[in-house]
Length: 353
Image 1: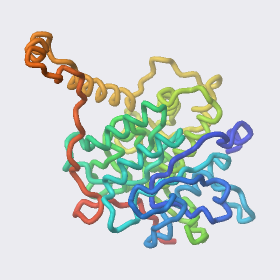
Image 2 (image 1 turned 30 degrees about the vertical axis):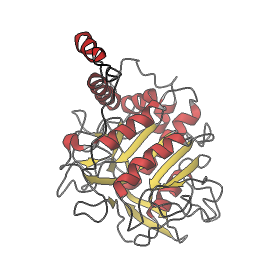
Image 3 (image 1 turned 60 degrees about the horizontal axis):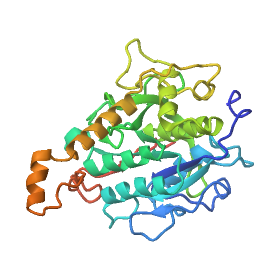
Image 4 (image 1 turned 180 degrees about the vertical axis):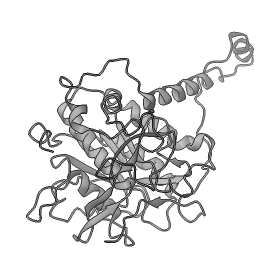
């Protein structure tokens, strides 16, 4: 971080962490975590981690992003950024799919400039691998100039199924690489992968305050990417989310001869390149597949909501109908319940060590 921290440490940027909540009582996070939200119905403000199985998945992700330096030496990538914790899982009685939809919208309405989601659901049973209500929530965030980041998945060497929200249009889907920039064996192999980041042997801070030196997964890669985006946005305050993502893609370090690569997308995210507009210029017409897909989805939504023909409108007016008004298509019914159903939500777990 020697090229970055002299320039910025993330001051002025808020990263929403949609996860199991964050233990804001830890010294490393006490000054970093804002009052957030809970869309599971558990009644918290996001500042309590309800993950007992893995000692605080949400806390670990928040610490990687914005932990303040303390005597033990652990520090986040953007240690002057703030975390907006949004609990979307951890409650066994909640409808986690609905919680995720509401969580994205909550983050968009409460000052987030980056949304980080280290979660994944089976998208193979869903049309276009992304439910309509999730996609609509992501579009809602994009219209508010928010960069949305999500984990690509951890079953690349097994099922390798499509997962959302990573597969949704408008999302920077993150794969994992090791310290030599080689793709991690388990990182997902899908055409939606945008970039990659370190996800092997990543230390993390648990909700209990314990430090674990050996974490792995696209969860960690996603949190580190979200922190990097915070640094880029802190340095370039007027740069749009669309341009941030374009620069991420254009300045990434490729890991394959043919791009995009199914495991690492356009390459490993290089924070210092993305934030340095003078040293690493990017053409305005450089590819931006993340937003191209989103633009296509929005165009389809507009087309489906277009007014009826003048002839039909005349007929309707003659019958005193009000149905000639613009109507936007409703979101589909929930396709997959994330908790308590066989497909389930799962977090990118660590290797014990």
